[in-house]
Length: 362
Ligand code: PMV
Image (cartoon, rainbow, N blue to C red; front, side):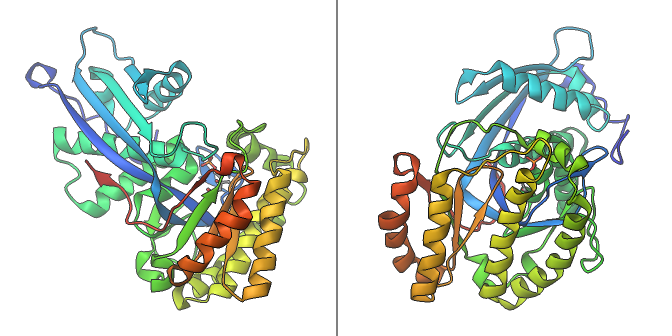
């Protein structure tokens, strides 16, 4: 049972014409990280992220009245136009899990075509963009069939809630510029159940911020996010970590409001290293950083000391490095990345990304 359970959303399939809906949804980069969960995808601490632009997923959901009489999810899934059984199975599990929210899904034959803007297995996590795009498609279907989500705010909130059930971090991709997920007394309306938009609380500087993603390695991760979250249950530093994330969030929000790059950057870097520190201090312990990750981090810190340019790094749960900097120094930073950081990357691969305006229906 969920807060959005609605047994009334049942179709008269005899009248239903086949149709489709398509959404493009971006990835996001958490500055205060979500790491550790409980219950049904509920976070142990609040997190805040920047919404990205050029790393996105396009998802087309086609539907028609079901031919068989049962109520099970019927799904064909194509990733970059090829059938993909492991992804299909994961999505069937997710869609079965949200059938109490969207009971009409059991009445349809569904086909999903999905693709990412970034190369397949480039090492860029795609669950946030993929699950948010799918959640938006589901909300669009509900609205098309039942006209229940014509209020934009309610539409986004429900999409964020549903995206969260697919992948926690995906709930933050629904909103432009920045989003906060997790109940936090300083942000009215914040919730563990969905993210809330933060654009209005963010200084201009961060609204046009850059986040270039350097691919140090595109190999599949040794330990995935779900296992990583679970390992927090026995991590001896877990409770301190959750308290510290809340404490830092206060200072980060202040810095993001004022445009204080130094405080922002210091917190961003510390959060990234804390995330990896938690992985290294778990039992079993694991390391996702690669030698190239450390080399890039070192070089960024040296560059900052040498030039005074506010260039900072962040990491996701993987070896790749996000290079963060404001728009006004792009012409200095890009050559630095190309000349000095790309040699540490796999086949010099990187994705130029920046803070964006959130998902769009295509
Ligand atoms: O959404 P998940 O379950 O894949 O977890 C993502 C966790 C991090 O990306 C490491 C941090 C975050 O807040 O996005």
